[in-house]
Image (cartoon, rainbow, N blue to C red; front, side, top):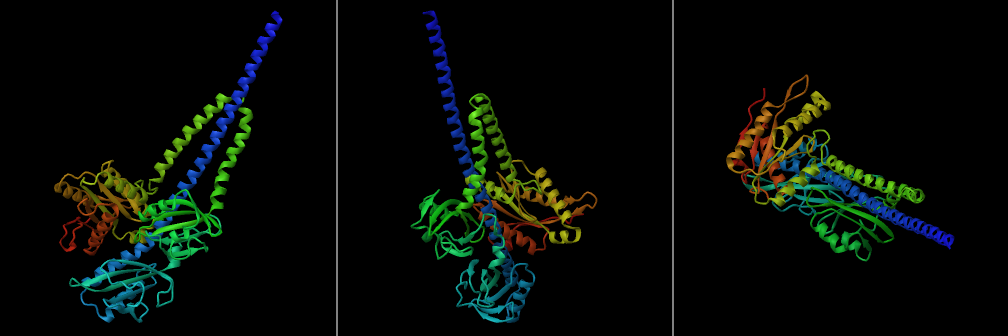
Length: 507
């Protein structure tokens, strides 16, 4: 009887161990399945973030290429208007000078208000019958399959000029489509890569790359109708495009299965759409998951004995991943050369502050180093980098840690000063930044003094969002250059009456 009770007790213990082992096994399997799910989701989120970030960078390059023409045309229109009446000989001379002094423009046309004028080729032209003919008082952007002069596909920017306050004509600049599209990736995302530039209504402005159902015709929205869309609904896509926001989704139709990534450019509210074979994203996810799958198979056996150990490893890995992600976020916001915010982070942080503090007066300086190309050409690009690095360091030391300091590219910088209480402080900050350049020197052995042309705008008085503030500051900057450089100009609706603070000549 006692033996039976002992045997029963042993059987009960064995049953408990078997039950415990089975329960542990089930728990382990559940944990591993959950880990697999998280890893798969993380992999999908990671590729989405990667593609959105890279597409934004490509869109910025495309927008910058087009906007460069706008800056050149704006500068030219100011010069033409300031020189008075424009003769036919002047039109030809201006047009040829624009092409000669630009690295990207292959054709320039100067016209009167009726569209008649001269091209840089020397030919007399009439643009009044062209689809991109500008009759307004603002900058106009267009893409054309035939410029009508040299027969090239091109992006066109036209800017009006005025003489004695009266509209007198337009400056047209042309850059070949291939020159703009060279900023796009070639085989980074597999084969059959397609691109489209669209507006906020989904209209396809231009298309390049492989032929695709989604970059053909006149409208992306029309192409998406009747297809299977996932990740976002068609209504959500329209809202994002209309708001000039980034979008990432999948579309299957027209015999294709594509991942479509959309990001805004800086030109005319146009947006760049990169159309990628879904096989590429699937391959990346599968590649990222292959190691996880192998780990799960091995861990199923090991974790039956070392469950606690695996849980610790999982928690440590999760913590490490969190720390790595935080480090990557900080690194992604930093300009590697100067140590200040990069272009994307600068625009984002300033716009976020403006949105959150719409009534708080702030001051934004936009500036670049005078004759920086000459510094590179005479002192070398390494010394030019040293000038930029030193400037970034001094700006960081000069202003508050709460202010936003960023490099937009090249030698162009932004300083955004928060919470400026009164006009006296505006003047003091203007004197402060000019004094910085008065004392600025770079180089360990050769002490080089560099000056800057600075444009300033007051938020929200001059502009209520980053894009507007940037454009107005850019106008003030160009006014500073026009006045002879080495000075600060505050934006005013009439730049002829703006207040100017001129820096003393550096030693």
